Amino acid sequence: MKAGFAQTDITPPVGVELCGFGFFLRRRSNGVYEPLYAKAMAVGAGGEEIIIVACDLIGLSKQIADEAKSYASELTGVPADAIMVCCTHTHSGPATVDFIGLGEPDQRYLARLPGKIAQAAYQAHKNLVEAEMSVAEVEVPVAEFCYNREYGGKRNGESTGEPLDEKAIVFKFSSRQKLIGLASFYSVHPVVCCEQTFKIHGDFVGVASNIVARENGDAVALFLQGACGDINPIYCHKPEVVSLRNLEKLATRYAQILRQGLKEAKPVRVDSIGVSSRFVTLRQQLPDKEELEQRLAAAKRVLRKESLDEKEEQCATFELYATTAVLRKLSKKDPPEMTVELQALRIGEMVFIGHPFEMFNAIKKTVERNVQPGKVFVVGYANDYKGYAPTEDQYALNDKQKSEFSYAAYSVPRIRGDYCFDPALGIVLANEMTELYSEVGLGNGESSTGQNRN
Image (cartoon, rainbow, N blue to C red; front, side, top):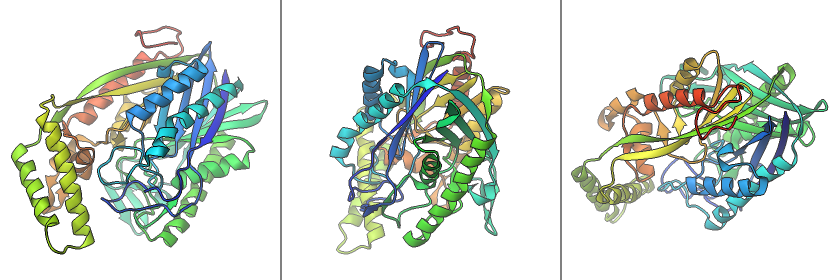
């Protein structure tokens, strides 16, 4: 097998709005704590090649991802369907998705972004050398890292509840006994720094990855985000001084996980590469037009007050634009459905399935159980961004007055000016990814669909 790594700097100019944590915050960056990167890993075997590019960004639109993949394909000769562009989901980077009120995009930055992502893929392709791949599963002391914010909690400083990831996976690539690159896979929201912070960086997963990469000369370290939709770090939503201190704490801990993985990694055989993808149409729920019109009228009444506090203004402004967007969509009378791409890239017997969601962890675990004893890594924020994929039970939580309300199920779709998904979303995705896993081929050199190349 062959492997190659590279990275390009995708740090935005200081002053851009950072993405996430509240509506119309005007959270403009005031400095760079650490650069943002597009980090690429190219792997070849059996005359085929795949490329994964992990970006220190909150997410990417399909338009930007497709443009980056198309240009990367043009530069490398690797088909676009064999290239995955995913994101770590840092909230300390620029607005790169069409959110309503969660950060104003810098259009000049976005115009250059696809080319920079493609260049990372191209350089990784150029850097292909004979290599050995090794893999480690490292036990994570969960109480020191994260907790499930929907099904668990924190008690006496310790995280409780399930589901979450008990292990981080470290993929090590060496050539002539020298580390050339690594990737790690884990599920956690990179939100140690939050609405009270203004520095640009990849949060603790990005900082940790860079620490370990620098310790190994010119190595590149990717972070592949798992199913973090309901997983928070143990430190979040603190003032900037405290948040930056906590950032260093968690980065130091995760860096140690990576070092342990590099030390314990065992060689795996890679004789072939597999590629498959499928487009899945997902059902959505039509909203009530009268209710939307009432919400819009209420927002306008608030905004016409002679005086109102900042929070009230922010929320009403969001309600104005989000409700208008949903009403506009409703007026088009399009079917309540959305088509998304699921992509599978296989390295030997390990399958990476990319999807465009912030997925709840239980859905990922369902896929993992379904394919046992096979190895599958469900990678989020891949090739597009379509909001949250919560579990079915979240759709029963729709009563704000009783404080029984699912932000993931009901608020996030409106941030995109879109409809809520059908409650069976998670079940459908788990089934589709399980089938896709079986299609990609496990080293048998056969294609089970026209989209496979093994």
